Image (cartoon, rainbow, N blue to C red; front, side, top):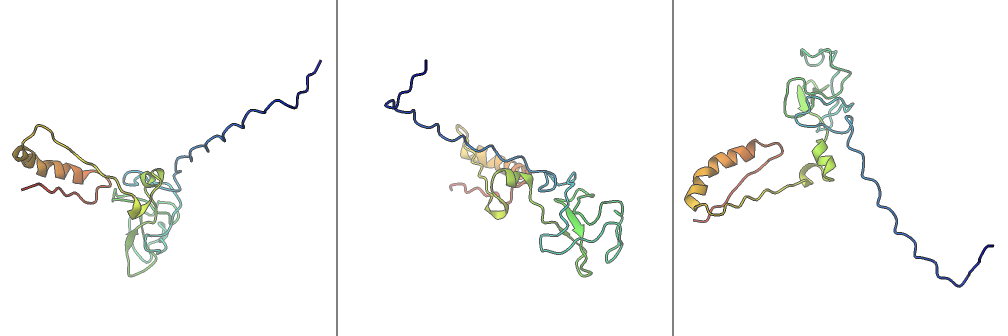
Length: 154
């Protein structure tokens, strides 16, 4: 026996599920660290120049003829993927490949920013100041740190 009842209120609809997180950036989209293992297909520099074919010595002679096509690479552990350009006046430039960390954080380029605040409690100002040069040197050596400054009250 089936019961049909039209006067019963329906339960409210369930809220929609949140969208799944985006997949991690693939090797074609970004680089990690210095980009020494970058294997993508970007072939333009940050200023828009086309990359020279690695197998070619024109217009720039070099020693990495075994690298693929004209894709950006970092065979010498520079700061980021780079390439020789097809412009005879510009030997090489860094490539237009974003860092994976910038993409994962949802920000890119100059708009991405992080702030580190260090508070020393129970340490005299003189003791903190004596440790400051070493601490600032350590912070400046970290990846993605572009400016370190510390105002100390007089």
